[in-house]
Length: 164
Image 1: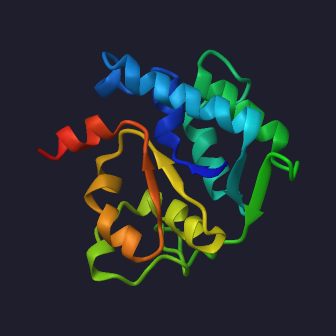
Image 2 (image 1 turned 45 degrees about the vertical axis):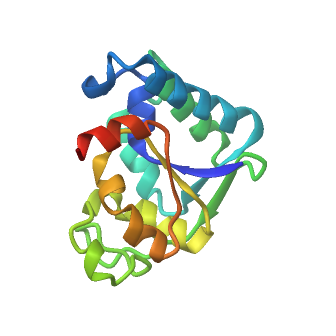
């Protein structure tokens, strides 16, 4: 299994997502997903550290105190190991979250600029994006799929209920 991991999975695994603190199923789903990647999978990252920079701004690189921090430390330790990590190039057009590889689809014009790097990476690497509690991914799931971006929702009940 190879995946692109949205930062919110790491935050949920750290129990740093207030909206799901009372949802042990969601938290466990995120922790198990990260454990599966560490034991049997690969993380897919961009070679310009767009995603790692976002992780760095939201997590503790020494691996403590949460499961998301632990995964981040594992990523840092394995980013150059092809058994655990694949790197791909994405092209930033500016500092506003615009990437050359991001689809020119009218239905995606309001997609969160901070998450566009994950979409661009998904397109160039042909890899599924895993996410947990970000409702923007759910809102745009049809347009993303139409543009070749598959999204895996680890906390689908939360995002579905958010949009009801």
